[in-house]
Amino acid sequence: MGIRAIVVDTAGTTTDLSFIEDTLFSYSLEKLPAFLEQHQNDVLVDSCICDVREMALEPDADIARIAAILQQWIKDDRKATPLKTLQGLIWKQGYDEQEFTGHIFPDFIEAIKHYTENNMRVYSFSSGSVDAQKLLFAHSDGGDLTPLFSGHFDTRTGNKTDPQAYLNILNTTSLSPKQVLFISDRQEELKAAQAAGLNVCLMSRDAGVQSQYQQITSFNDLSL
Ligand SMILES: CSCCC(=O)C(=O)COP(=O)(O)O
Ligand SMILES: [Mg+2]
Image (cartoon, rainbow, N blue to C red):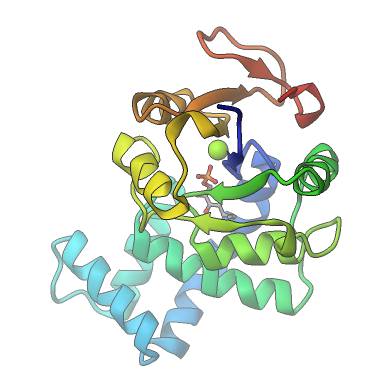
């Protein structure tokens, strides 16, 4: 049975890590305190604030303290769902105000067009929220890529280092493990996907690294 779907990681795979860290993470780090002050009574923001209080074991944390906790989580690159949801909301303002566009490697833009023309399904799976992924691909340097995707998955599907997350993706997409290829720059994510039975491939954008996994440096190297 051949590959029917490709699941791509974003940071380090479709998108330059430096854009994620230096542009997106920095933007959310700076805007977070004012954003929380302004939107703390919005239903979704309020629910994220409650989750942060619970996760940090600080039930009485005020808004300034919540902002400080979240800023530390950004610096630590914590993949916590409430942080990722809030970052998505903050980045929406940045995209809307044209402060940046979403960096996507040109080889991925060519590849996704080619895959979908050949009836291959493409999904993204990121620790960034589904909304953040849609923003990244909708405001990409290569135009709106969202119509080319069959779907997106985030931490609500599971942690990327947990095999159960990939079983949940298979369940949602009604695909069998061997019909799916997962591509990521992080070997611990490939290990989890492989444990769930998926085909896996390591994206090494900078150069080859020591690895047991099949390895590519761009989507141009991928033969299906
Ligand atoms: C979808 S853009 C934001 C990506 C993000 O927040 C992040 O933490 C990167 O994680 P990934 O799983 O895509 O490497
Ligand atoms: Mg990555």
